[in-house]
Image 1 (cartoon, rainbow, N blue to C red):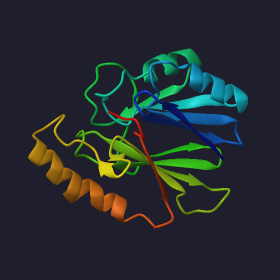
Image 2 (image 1 turned 180 degrees about the horizontal axis):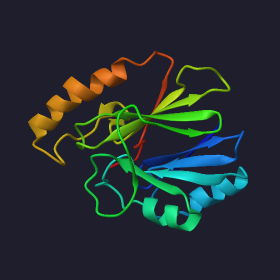
Image 3 (image 1 turned 90 degrees about the horizontal axis):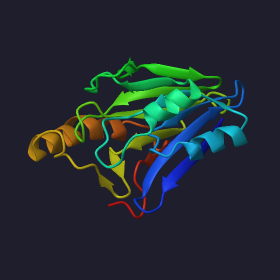
Image 4 (image 1 turned 90 degrees about the vertical axis):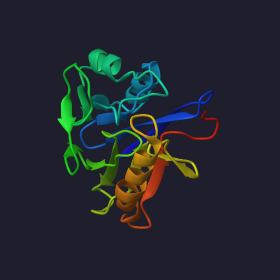
Length: 186
C-alpha cells in the first residue's frame, strides 16, 4: 500500500490518496477543486484513480470530486445520506471498497453533517487489523468538528458525543487518525 496527503497550506485542508501496489489503483478522499496534485501523485506511483470519495457535503471548500472522477473515469462515491442530485455510488456504514491489498471500510459518524463518513483503512499486506482512519472534517487536530452547520448546535454536539465519538473510541490504540484539517485551518 502507498499513502499520500495533499495539503492546501493557506487553509490547512488535508486530503488523502490511498493506493494499492498489487493492482496499481488508488482512491482519492475529499479532493480539492484543483485536481492536478492528485493526477500528479497517481502518475508518480504509476497508479490509476479507481475511486473518488467525498466524505460529506463540504462547507469549507469546493469539492473537486466530480471533476476528478470525470477526468480519470473513476467511480464517484458519496455517503448514502448525502443530499445531492448528481449520480454517484452510495455507501453506508460497514460497506467496503477494495483496491488490491487495501480495504476502505465506511464508518458513519454523524454530528458535523448527518451524512458524514470516515474511512477505516486496512493494508492486508501488513495484516488484518486496520492501519488508519481518515476522519475528514469529523476530527480536527486537537478538536472535533463544528456541530452546528447542518442542524442545531446542541443536537449536533449530542450526536457527535453520543454516536460518533464512541465509534472512534472503539478503535484499537494503534490505529492512526488522519484529520481533514491540519495547522492553518480556519
